[in-house]
Image 1 (tube, rainbow, N blue to C red):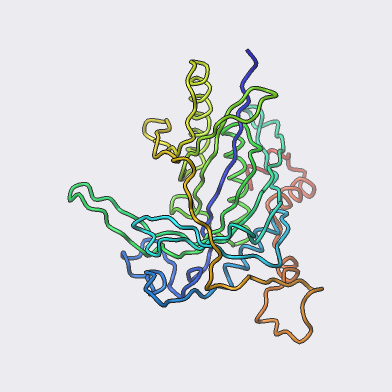
Image 2 (cartoon, rainbow, N blue to C red):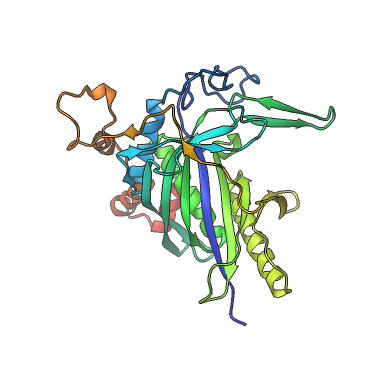
Length: 340
């Protein structure tokens, strides 16, 4: 039998490093007392309106430029409807139709032997980066049979980075996320601390034979460490291959990684395809960005976001710093990865 080809794509939610939320003035702070950082808009009281946070837009543009994306000078906001206790509005504001950045790429390196003596560099395409709100948190209290809702996180700004299915194993997925994490931290656009939920990864995994179309994919949700990401992806690839070789079928389902058992477990069926009933967000105008060419002469620079201005102020990325270490100090390339 022909060998199986695994296909792995990632969706990464990075919390934007900002003092206030995406559409309200509430503070952002990890581990604050429950429901202490909630504005009327975050609790979606009727009549409250969103006001876009400039810092979040600048962070998304900066990240898009660092990942070689085209920045859309006009992007749109949409409502994505679903019903959950920690989403008081019944919808999330996101960018489904025209996101802020598209068509980028991320180069990452991994060692092909255990001694770290041979590095290989690969590239994953970035489909898009979109701005969206985070939801609140549900805390399940089993002793009292209650679910408690904390809205401190509701409305916090996220960047969703969608990577194309260009990876084929857990190690590649882990290396790509590690490099992205370093880039976000270098830019200051996200602190990307996985332990605090500032970087959450969903992995889409499928397997197929050469020359055949992609197989049915499963999604492993909310992976919160790079080590667990590698384990979850490799386990899921192996599980699907064994299932298919034993004559079974793969279900299009959402799974979670159980770190204690070291395996993935089903969460809920992606029944058919969940209908999110996307619609344009009526309370937000299109987000218009400018560059040096398109900036009107009489425009107040404080009121607009200039892509070129952000581009000029990008810091050296980790890949550039590593090259400098190799060129200036004669360090071996694989050692530069240990340092950075």
